[in-house]
Image (tube, helix red, strand yellow):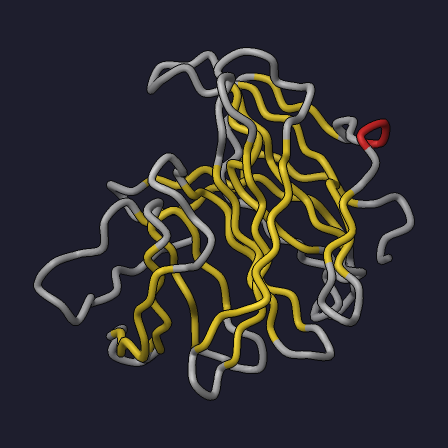
Length: 231
């Protein structure tokens, strides 16, 4: 895959962008989040690759100790629900935050917090390196071992709970918080569910890509297709 650069409309670039998510109901509207909790809602012009910023704000419920790394959006009956998380460490648990977003005035309210402390990895732990939500409302996290730029790395994938139609997050019982997949020597910091329903022959699969920021390419490293084809 070939990657293309976008033109940021402001002289100063965002600081430490950690997450990007498509806004529900829009084709070219997105939200990005800094590790500080500052968020940008913007449009991308697919023809001239320029960005138009619609709104900037700081997500509620965060503290100075937090370092946010995961962001996902769930379309509930009440409206969009933002889910975002502090990565945590060995010394402190992560915090998962949910909040209702009103796109008409950009208000964010009904903030709820959940403590996340996962059993694996054990060393240099980050409970939330990224968040994603599957088609059934299941909330997933990538928990990583990240001792520094040179590793060694490790990632454990968990389903930590479930969003219901009213926008409430139901946290899994601690006894159910077991990794469903462990990836050695890899630090997974971006996840997305692609159920493959837009393919000519629908196919559900998990894929891992390696991003080359110098040559602007994305290379498929590994994939697993479900034996039943499409779920």
